[in-house]
Length: 329
Ligand code: UDP
Image (cartoon, rainbow, N blue to C red; front, side, top):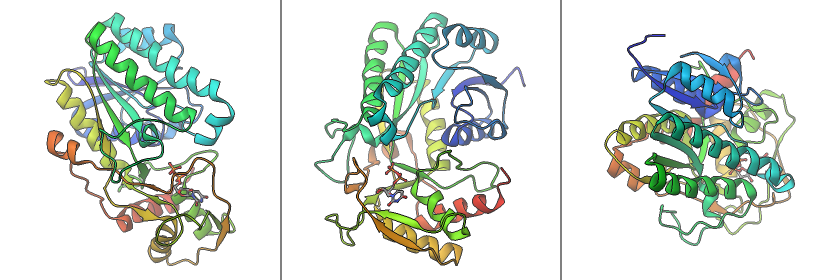
């Protein structure tokens, strides 16, 4: 570790989005300190700084790691993120996502660390009334996962007032794609996300992809989502970190491309990219899926100068496909 570099604690740094943020941090001259319980994270994804195994609910361990590294800011990715599971087992989500964040924030307060970047989600908006969704849209989540993230956004406002912890919450739309160098990428177990499942159907690892409903009120009847490249999400975290050097408060920005693609459009694009036949089946709607989610990211573009590099679906799927074929894990 270069002792002159600024250290950033990255909870969940062994996960999909967290590991891409670690790569971006290292490229920007920071040392990412990954803090991860490795329940869903992968040790092989930690390549740009030390890995400290630990749980966000473990105050003693957090205290120890923060005392050792004295980070100047915290990026908090560690969370459970399966919407369906959150409905079945809400306690697991509130304990980990809310109590875990609260524990982390209290340790930060005790160590006088005052910069926090939080992985929030478009799921905090619930079923949108207007499209594209801006940050001022009402927030009425429809599942415990979205509720848990919104609760942390609220805690952040209170921690700013009481303890001066400044924060930026980034509300991601659908994270997708992989590092363009294929050093890291998406690998969940169980996998529930559309693009990796489609790529599994392309390689024959799965027999087909099930389309969850084709009777929505959308042009082709399938759900529309705003897919945003994970490297563009990571880049936003660096901009947010730099902004927190001068910006006080607890604020939130959307992170999306502002373009919506239906499930069928994603499958068609994947067919072109992979040159594979991708068998599909029409299944039932998945509970809790709004028909259309598209984000308005004007605010982060204007205030932080964020500009997505992988703004088209083809390049997002191309990077995912390259990773899918190269990964040996
Ligand atoms: N989806 C699908 N089949 C699958 C997985 C997902 O049709 O096997 C649909 C899902 O209903 C949603 C979109 O693909 O409309 C994106 O789902 P994903 O789970 O990737 O992300 P989410 O939108 O839930 O965050």
